[in-house]
Amino acid sequence: MSQENSTPKKHDELLEKKALSLKGGGDKRVEAQHKRGKLTARERVSLLLDNDSFEELDPFVLHRSTNFGLDNQHFLGDAVVTGYGEVNGRLTFVYAQDFTVLGGSLSEAVANKICKVMDKAMESGAPIVGLIDSGGARIQEGVDSLSGYGSIFHRNVMSSGVIPQISVMMGPAAGGATYSPALTDFIFMVEGLGQMYITGPDVIRAVTSEDISHEDLGGTEAHTVKSGVAHFAEETEESCIARVQELLSYLPQNNMENSPPISTSDSPHRYSDDLNTLIPDNPNQPYNMLDVIHTVVDETNFLQVHKNFAPNILVGFARFDGKSVGIVAQQPDHFAGVLDIDASVKAARFVRFCDAFNIPLVTFIDVPGFMPGSSQEYGGIIRHGAKLIFAYAEATVPKISVLTRKAYGGAYIVMSSKNLKGDINYSWPTGQVAVMGAEGAVNIIHRSQIRESDDPQKLTAQLVAEYEENLMNPYIAASRGMIDDVIEPGQTRLKVIRALKMLANKRETIPPKKHGSIPL
Image 1 (cartoon, one colour):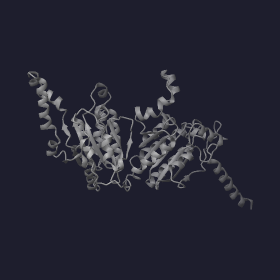
Image 2: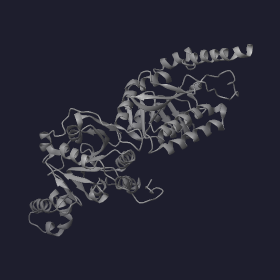
Image 3: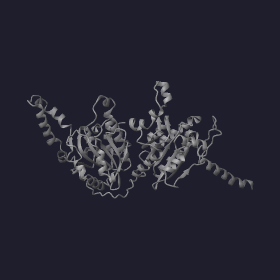
Image 4: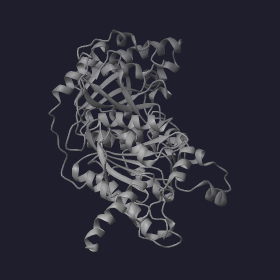
């Protein structure tokens, strides 16, 4: 009889412990977490997922190590909360590292929990969001914790291009722990809280004598402005999670589906007269390409990705007639929209993501060429620029481009040109396609004639005008079929929407192969 009663008693004890586990490492550690200005793992999960939709997995898991003082520090669920729920009614998997439990350190048990939820996400064909806040590998477990990281990395790679993977840096990640976020599609950082670095300030100080703070080394500005490792920065955890939810709304569940359309009151026939006078008469005068994007997309909504990194090119998500697209655009307001190393890598990565997840690409072009200079050449601009060529050429999603002003030299070819299998290539009447700018071309072609002229300045101006009229205007490219149509700027929204509708069932395949050899 006593044996029969032991099971309910054991069950009650576990339920009691589970109730305590909702407080993570206990009241004092939760209080310490709040004093740091940080939410707990469960509070973060609750913010991310729709109300009452969270289903936890493995809440009773315990770590197995009893070494080095851990024998009396067992917490149900260990240092991570895992499970699934819904974001805006769509299935989403999540894991949230719990800093209140042994500093959120990665044990064998924690790694197994994360790997299980990643496997479930793959099997179910749904996005996974990792909320990162960890002191790193649990040193008491030695190689077991390192092995756990390896297993997570492998799943990151296998999931790549199959389901969207998002990492949210809400605390520290150091050493090998940084590579899991780096393998995911998008990284968010909370200002003042999220930090990422391979080697910490103390080690750097000991090895190189460089004195640098945690924030300067691996904080938000370091990675959203300088390194480009992170894609989004937000001031608070709440605004950061809201941005994650917004991003998910643009994405499909997996690579076999399309992004969900939404209803919009923005007419697909809307005409934008302001665009007809947007381009300055002076070809060297900048303008803001965001004015073009905000004008033509649904309800001016454009979610910029990598907003503060390589600002000479813009990438992000928007909608046309309720359907998601990825946008790539030069930004003449920054370095005249020139393509440099960072801009090339930024755009190439975004193009490949969109192609992997069936998101059509709309490209707005105003590019004077690739950035000249020894620093760019030594930095490998040839190799990095080739990544963008590879990305556009390999992409099989609908590709629509709009040439607003200039496209010179190799940069013309790179930006979704007809030669790289662009589906529909439009140009505004202000568009120019040429090997180089008119003045530079004239100074090469007519060098002797200009040198011998009585009025070199007048002759140069005359020759430049002739060159622009005869070789650079968009009707020349249109006569060769490299531009499909020269359109009125005010009709850009209508033209893009009609092209997207025409291309909705596009089917294009690439030659059978294991994978291409992109110039990494």
